[in-house]
Image (spheres, rainbow, N blue to C red):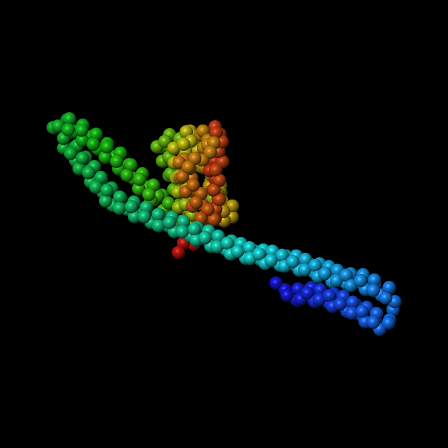
Length: 318
């Protein structure tokens, strides 16, 4: 708070009081010395002194009020500066938090993929080999019982078919954990996934890839993310859409990849939590990679899932 203007206001009031006293003293002295007519001088003095005091007090009041307004403005300006600084700090903290969250999500995806690959290898090398050996033993028993034990031969045949189904299911599980088709490229992985999807669920599919959609340099993690998003989208169609056809489109515009999954199912009026948890996971993954994820759906008009993502991740995983 500035003290110089306040001293000025106090000084003005004192000056007015001294001037009034000086005027009163001058009138008294002039009367005693015989200067001027008392009938004129004294009334003038009585009028001048209060006016001098009133003028001094008025100036003091005006200056004090002006100082209070200035003090209030200075306080408001100071508070505004503090709030602006706090907002800048909050924005920087939010940006740091968002960056850290994106990096954490990508690290989780990285760890999740490594763990899936490890589990897939363990299942393939251990359980898969045991099932294959079991199938071979059953085949040998079936051959040896063909003529001597007809009933046992038929029973072993049923066990062989069950073993084949178990091996097929195991391969599907391994492929979901570790999409081996990705080792042949994203295009092969998508085509294989769609063919398997149609075979298992009886839902027609159509793949439309623009020229160059599968070309160019891409981050391997982006290919994995696109494939996982496609898997979750197709699973969502099976669980909720009641669709008979799915259309998948992949386009590339510069460094931007866009994947769209459209079904002709019953659509969605909303996105309940129990129904949308998988889709929420997709949205988190895409956002962490610097992309966008949009769901467009109306009851009876099907659902369109669209995501757009950079061909290379924007936040590196350390």
